Image (cartoon, rainbow, N blue to C red; front, side, top):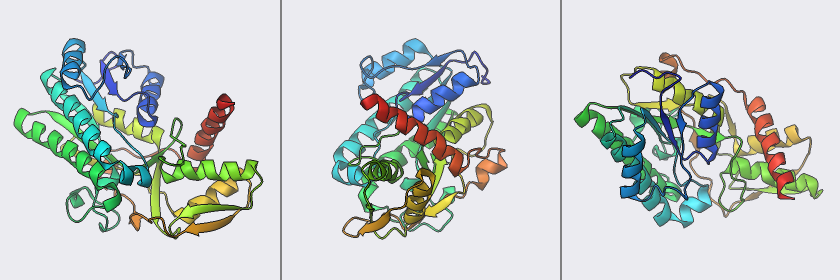
Length: 314
């Protein structure tokens, strides 16, 4: 079945940053049959009820944005939760989709499941080509299993279950909890708080030299719709932005955007993570997809949402 405006599309994980962006995007594109379900009504860790739900609803397409995610500290401190919950959620959804007759599915992988010292920019074929970053190996192994599960179901059952591998993401509805969030929203929160409290310094993890690429989450939503529509031979596709800075570079960029000048201190007891991580997304470009949001435009939309959240907390 070809994707059309009446297709029934199930977005799993619609409350998170990625899932909410996908739902917003599909609504904006006038899709009329978007299926979501709240956690109180369906626990995706529950295999039987996940199967019952998908067998009853019979979606034409599925996008798996549901996952347990977090920054370095969360990944390192809660490894058991990260490996168990991600394995269980994705296995339940992929297998139940197959049982429900879903022929096309998007599984969202992650750039952080590639080896720690991958050649840069990272190509799709570098998966499983070396050792993983130890701070998030539990999450990475779970996600790799999801990619391999999709590959296996394609091979055995003749399906089109595609793994999109986004680079680091940011955008509205992100978590700004300093203990568990990724470094970009954590930086926004730290710099904002320092400005409000008239502080002179901020502290960043490691030496600030690690390089990262970031993609605005609405570009990933666009890629999900694009590859649901597109007939593709390849089933693992990197989704990047080509926009790269050091951790220190992002701190300076955010300070400039917020019109504040702070001295940057380094917490060298904290890990640097992978030295450099940027995706080669030539394959996506060959299929005709490319990102639309600049880092500056993406930040403006993200910061606007962040301030709104802060005002709602008061």
